[in-house]
Image 1 (tube, rainbow, N blue to C red):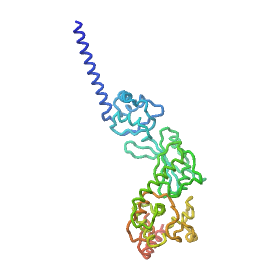
Image 2: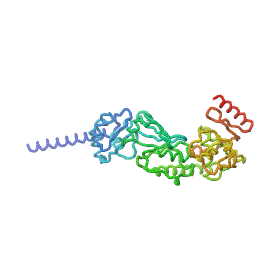
Image 3: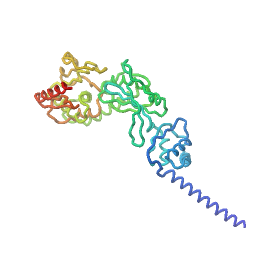
Image 4: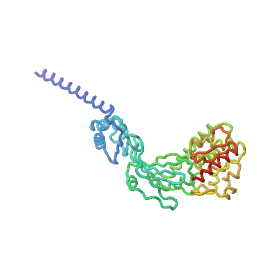
Length: 388
């Protein structure tokens, strides 16, 4: 009898082991297989949250089939204590294993609300936008212009105040091509998530702040952001100068930066940059003066503020080192922060016979090889101006 009982017990034990192995295998398969999520979602993990709360939220959203399996998997892989607060993009079909990795790997939030401080050539704009997980496009929910240089700005939207205090809000500073160093530094005063300021004797050299989009962390120092911009611009200058064309009328990276800044201010049309560059290169090769208004304007404003009017004859005849109607060659330094495309155009211009260009009324320019052609283009532009 005892032998029969022992045999039955052994059989039951083996059966239990097989069943347990089957359950473990099923659970592992559930944990690593493609999940049920039909459309990407943005998962918000509040500060102080736990895997119990997160797994329940995921189950409610239809991202996982079983919250318990996700918790067990996180515990088994020793990731329970690594849960991070933030807003995380969970792609469609993500497995539980992939989701656990997403919320524990660290780094910045990958979706949710973002406040963008857009530094333009003349103004700064603040945008509040939300990433749509399904389309991967941002939807702007509010925007306003802050006050600058003593001027009163637009009313601050309530939604901005609300997200500004949220722990998972991300922040970004976007610098446009063609801004001056003064404009960038002045605008950074409105980036209220940054600490510190740039003193007058610490201003970076003109042209040395790389136009780009920079993610910043609330409480970080403005000097650190400026340093990132300078390092980025230095790297771009080195790479682009190393890939320059032969027989250019410029001999240093500094001259390239100066020429690129003029190109940047003369045209905002990407397809025109190399043509505009060819005009200036042809003029330099022929010993002609550049005769470009943006350099004269910089000489008048010194890169501070916005001129807001046409140039006067006295300014066009002044002995300013930036007056390219008077001086030969390039001005002594850049007149703005040029982007990559303008720097590339400066050292790899189109091959053209053009030495003139003027606005054509469409936002672009009309190019000419001879003065007669140029005068005809100018006459067309004057007619367009008179009709506007």
